[in-house]
Length: 329
Image (cartoon, rainbow, N blue to C red; front, side, top):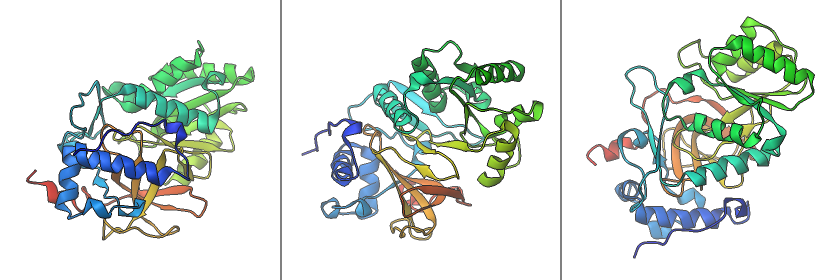
């Protein structure tokens, strides 16, 4: 008998019941998600013995490039595609319920930053706007709409208009969130250095081939100097997820209650490492109820004692070990 679909409010999940909720979702997905079920079987996992977070198998994220990750009897109402370099294959996230995504990023934003209506959101995401079906653009577009603020909006290459708007709103003392891809945020302050007092600067990562990659600390120092702020915020999300983690400064990220980070060994993808040690980032995203909530990413990181985590880089090789188990599937 297949497990019934768990029904719960994301905001009802907390540190005390997270494991029970995650195990419930695992039983549902391993019974109803054909790709995840096949993967779990091929690695020889006995699902009866999965009774803790540490025993849950995590699906390599590369499968989103080659397989349709969705639970049975679900039809996608939206498909999000990852950004990619020329010739690279994009990840595809088939979303069966967009309302779950909207609820997740709305509740997540409120959890960390308060009421969305208090902000003017200015978005500088040119590479994502130029690409179709970006989950990040979808999220920011909806958040902009939720602000109900005529000053909120997207900017493509019209940097002069954005600079003028930033200065004007900041001088008025309005609460502003400038969210942008890293290279575009740097491009803006190369055009004009700013001195902002009421603006949160949030980078979403990525040079997208437009600039040389740099470590977060170097990037953030340049952004602090260029925008005249003391703190740089960061968003950590990906096409394959429906939830986001945020850094409120110092490059340390926090997750909303329905999302959790675990760190796996680099050489053994099925073993976890203790807090404070570096390894591959595994993500549990309970909002991914209709696809897969347990994803082994290609990012490297470590978790601190206070549950905050940092991102250290990416794996050198293209695919995570374990993907070869599915080559014939």
